[in-house]
Amino acid sequence: MEQLDEIDLKLLKMLANDSSRTIKELAAQVSLSPSPVVQRVKRLETKGYIKKYIALLDPEKFNQGFIVLCNIKLKQHDRKIGHSFVEDILKIDEVVECYNISGDYDFFLKVFAKDMKHYQDFVFNKLGSVESIGSTHSTFVMAEIKNTNNISI
Image 1 (spheres, helix red, strand yellow):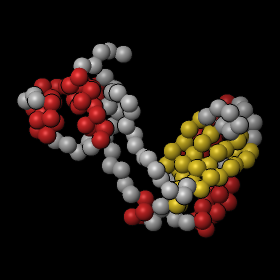
Image 2: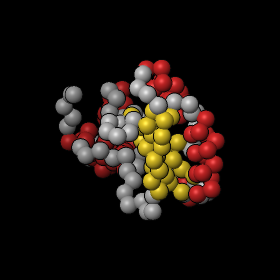
Image 3: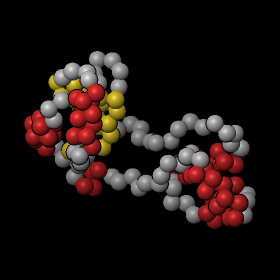
């Protein structure tokens, strides 16, 4: 990892907090003119420190505020079943995050649904059609306490 200076780190923190900031706003915050800030941001993008810019949508506004954390065990552990599971999960819109994990389960999903009935339909008709799944365990989110993509830098 190359060394990042204080200005790079400050730019990264500001963009992680609000990626809609203009170059002019960023430049004012780091006491530089816009031109070197553009160069720095482009370098940070090119080097992979900034993967992409996104808008975080409010699931409540889309009637999808019922959040479920779902642990998945595969039927068995082999390359074909693992790849099949990943291909199937990537096609399911309700699954907004998927992690391959260690421990008692193989995968951890974050699912957005309208309500319990919608989640039940999701489990029976969408997860139920994923042949590689051996078992599931669902945990229902009562309240979101912290949700950030920021990393400690």
